[in-house]
Image 1 (cartoon, helix red, strand yellow):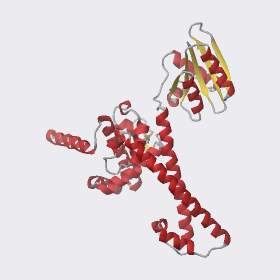
Image 2 (cartoon, rainbow, N blue to C red; image 1 turned 120 degrees about the vertical axis):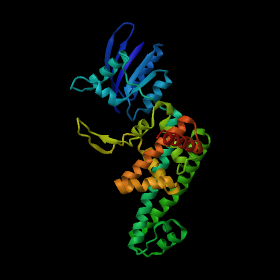
Image 3 (cartoon, rainbow, N blue to C red; image 1 turned 135 degrees about the horizontal axis):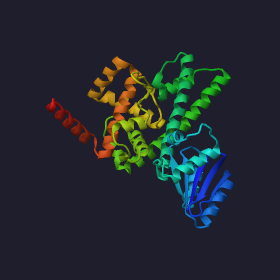
Image 4 (spheres, helix red, strand yellow; image 1 turned 90 degrees about the vertical axis):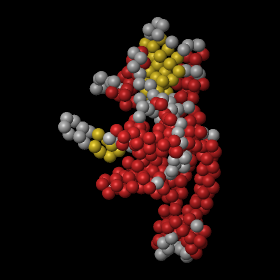
Length: 348
């Protein structure tokens, strides 16, 4: 069996590999893509069993597809944990590849869960729609600024036909008029694209029972439900709600020592898209649920609006996690919460 420790870079990869039968150790630097692809195809052609280990990184989709095509086993490790296992203060590409190989040989490689190709492709759908909506928001902000400069303060009415007609009726200088025309044309092209992507997301939700159950929670729409299912993956990977909050970067950064405890802003180490969607969904839940509204206003008075929004997003994430793990809908979740509260009051 050939075991390969790979230090991956966008332009090349440094590898250290050993043949477990002969014990022969070799090192190479492979340029992307031709040289690296030739090397792995030659190994596969020899009928050898190959295992490759690398740190989690971006810009490696082609490499992962190549190894899957060649039936090469790929281990992806937690880069932060691998870094903590480095003893020497020196750091080079050769030493990184040797460290990964050493951890794999010792069976101490911190392997992480990797989503399927279907999962990753659906994430691209979510990201694409999110970026299109952001682009539309930037266009609308520019049009709002143009309207304000002409004395028209219409806010959301600018999205309607009447507001648009008012904006188009203004007599502007030649280049300002050209800018208005171009912005409106871009907006007209974006709206059908966003609508099409939204319909595609709704169709994917219909195919996913877990996402449909999450949608029963107030404030959770198709986009948030599908994003939660795709990014969390297997709910049993986590033991409790605290781990979910940490995974999504919704816990405060802590720098404590001895009797001193210092908490900072949230870590933001998780998926930024899901964190954004949870904050937005939590605000909708606050508007529709009296219990959440009371909790939100209490936190807002004590800690401020921003911290209260994040706290409610964390609460929503934990609830969605338990719904996903237990296979509950919203009514079953409420029943479980009431039973727990009644048991606690009986004990008191």
